Image 1 (cartoon, rainbow over the protein chains, first blue to last red):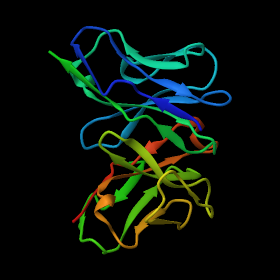
Image 2: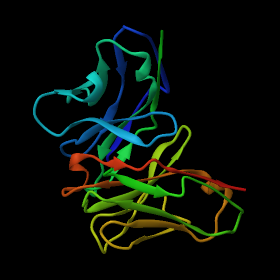
Image 3: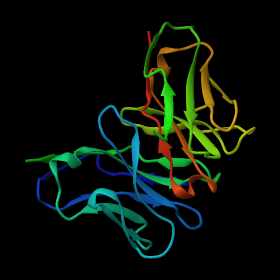
Image 4: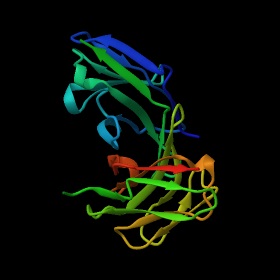
Length: 113
Length: 114
């Protein structure tokens, strides 16, 4: 089954520092990978996706993600964190049906001033 | 505003009661989904509808039924609510190609079963 794992429940970073939120995947075939963000009491918002092509994917709000096939990873990154980036982040992979996404358990990002 | 609309936003049910969660999208998307979100468990797929007239079970379908009423609407029904169904429920939709382009999510329904 197609799955993703987010090994960290929480990531803490100081404002202005670079941030990384980790995601590893397990798929058969080519992976379709996504990152979503959820602010408190809101639905999930799309950040970026990897389907094919360049291993560095740029997305919304200054986020980017690096696809690494040899390490089966798709880590989310941002060069300089903002307090407003504090939220819950989900990695996801397209499931076997080709329609539904399978989500990781989420990583809570806390950016402190 | 274009998007996915869920109603109600909050609901408290007694064990054994039934209810229907409503979802509608105005983006002409083909596929629609229902997820539940529980602390520490991420989002788990309940049911999905790849296109109008079709529905399929996801990871956690027990205790739920769905109806794809038309292209816009996809409802989730709890026939006999149980405390284990206390959760936040999200509806989502995606365009042609299923999840290729990612999802658009509704703002969620927070359900408590007492």
